[in-house]
Length: 201
Image 1 (spheres, one colour):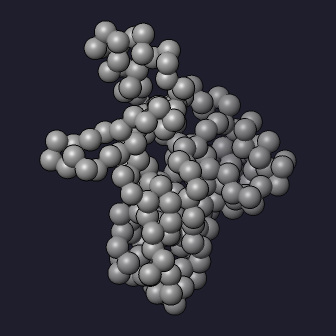
Image 2 (image 1 turned 30 degrees about the horizontal axis):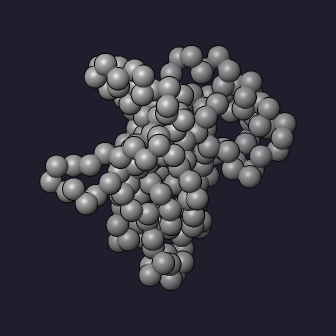
C-alpha cells in the first residue's frame, strides 16, 4: 500500500506530519508518495528507511532532478503527466536501474491546484453566499465546471476541499495504445487513477 502525502503543505500541518508518518510506519505501509522536502525530513525522524516515491506532479520532468531526489532516499519517480512518450522513455533510459519510474496510463488528471478556496471566494464576492450551503463541498457532485470562451465544448471539472481548489482535465488519460512501448522501455509501474488524487493529512 502506497500512501500519498504529496499535497501542497502549509505551516498548519507540519506539527502533525511527523506523528502521522510515524503511524503509517507502524502500519507497515510499503511506501510514501511525496513532493515536499518536509515529508523527507519527517521520514528521517519517524520512519527511517521507509521507501519514498517522489511525485511532485508537474515538476518531475527530468532525470537530473530525479537523481537528486534519489540521493535523498527516493526509490521511485512518478513522472509528470505532461511528458510525451519519447521524453518518458528517455528519462527511464537515463535513470536505468538507479530509480524506478512510474507513469499514469489511465484516469482523471489534476491540472491545477491552489491552496485558496476559489469557489467559496467567488461566490462570496458575487454576493451569492446562500449558494454555498447547497454545495456538497466537493464540486464534482455539484457539476461545477470551468469553460473557456474559446473552447466551449471543453468542460474542466472544478472542486474545492480542505486542501484548496482543484481543476481537473476535461478528458481522462488513456495510454492503452502505448502500453507495449512503455513496458518494452522498462517503465517499472503503470498507474490507473480511479478518482481525483488529493493527498490529505
